[in-house]
Image (cartoon, rainbow, N blue to C red; front, side):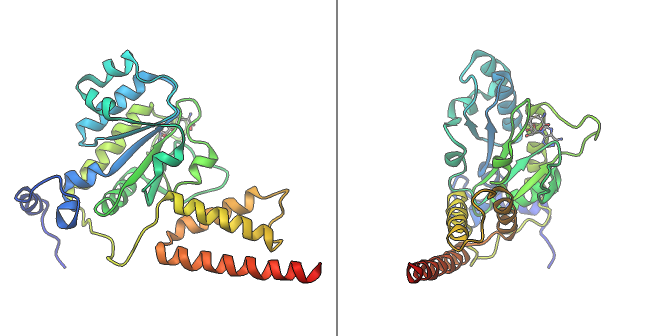
Length: 277
Ligand code: SAH
């Protein structure tokens, strides 16, 4: 099927009212961008928060979430935001990553380097296309790490993909706000370029981070109950299983099936335990 040109697409969208989330209107470029959360984790320098807000606003992003910022609000943040201090005022500050990710079925983690446990990686362009494709239907979060050491492993494990901005392998780490700028630019190009962006299938009911965490908690407990998991060494196995399920992107029905299987396994294990006593 031929794609509409981006000019036609935009003209069609301009005739529709903006701001609505439901149906066709939800997939206008501006609405798709509005559903992408930029999540800055544990940022040290308030100036970087301000500069990130500015980087976002020029690209049409508006949803800024701060998880345990070291210093915020601060005059340095406001100064570096320039005219984007409205984003700072509307920024949501969180005590934990959990609440920053609530309601987000797609979580992307930006990283300057590859970790010991390889995760599915996308470059900034592919990641932005994926984010914009999904933000037609639901919220998407993009995580940015601390200035000194980026995202920690536990944070990466909340992500379906890691995102890398191609850079000099010998000097790969961008300034935080500059990384936000590049991702913001790619998101905007994906939004207005209309590179074949589509809406996910209607019967796909994505789940958010809290439901994935619920599944992982239930899975870990079941693996202990059936004595598959060694409680002294749980980390590596759970990391691998998280990666498996994050890659699979189970939807609501599939989560229900999986948790039903876990519950049935726990029941059998419990009966076997009782019969032994
Ligand atoms: N020294 C840290 C880098 C911190 S830079 C480390 O080695 O991990 C601060 C943040 O900017 C990173 O956590 C990441 O979110 C983003 N960032 C910097 N360079 C990046 C790159 N090349 N690709 C993707 N994200 C990058």
